[in-house]
Length: 419
Image (cartoon, rainbow, N blue to C red; front, side, top):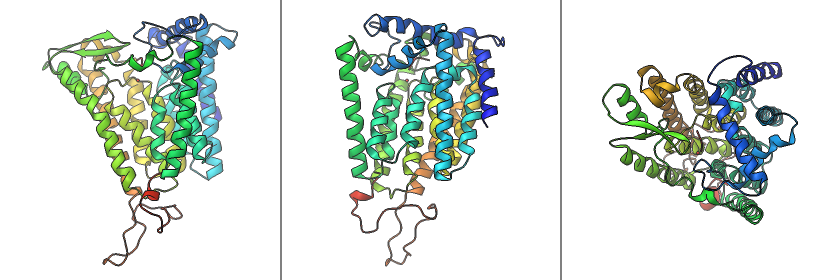
């Protein structure tokens, strides 16, 4: 497994640096150059101000400043830091698999699956955030530790907050939520005191439109390629966004879909009889919901999903079908960006647009399958004495913790290109 990781990552590094001339240099170098420019501003004593591409919490500064600790150029150093984080994720998955007696499918899913993204994998800072998320998923079963790590991840990029959904009971949720909140508040507070504009990210995304790669944009992308829609794309807020008839309404639907998905998860949470694996399963479902309902679906979002999916595969949970769909979406994303990006981003040609449509349909299927499996795997056992046996339910695994039958109802609950 380690030799495969070494070979694939060496190829990605050589491709990103164009030693292997794959073209599309700007697609891999552009964001790293932007990070380097922001790092210079941060070293000057403030966060980027008035830059509509800066949309990150204050601790995003850490992965952007880290390359300055290494002796090479910023670009090479950034790739090196990314590869170290990549390797750390792999080692965490190996540790988790050995500790729990899990499946090596998770290790292989990360080793091979992440490589499917191509040089993009090491050209964005999402690897650093995913490392924190995998730590939160695998390092400890203590809710306070999990919450602290989730809070740290949230202070780097917002999406790790989704991992709170799988905390299985009120005590776990309150402990983990409080721990996460303390880390975020203290972290952001210190950043605000040290550097100006630390909290500008809170309003940075309010003007964003509908990115061409998002699920809500898919009908417009296909209609444009077929000549049925007269809109166009334009570059703004660090991404290719749609402009034209119906886009504003679709954007509003996309914005409303996120809280609707949250309500769906809330209904599940109150009805669930959680197992030990619920923490991992709910993490995958929630992150999938965040991705498919987002106005922005940048290719690097797959790094988040791959990290969570690899943990799910290692844990042998009922989410494995959704995890395999995530890997399929990763392959399609690796084909999409940057190799056929011109088709769906600028020209509206059909071949590349069909790859985008297929990828988004796989994403949608993964989200639906994930939620269905989450619901089934946490169904309460049927009550005895009403003509039905007191059984565990068809989706429960032997030895799974489904909660003490004597617990009250409350104790049965579970414990954004530039984005």
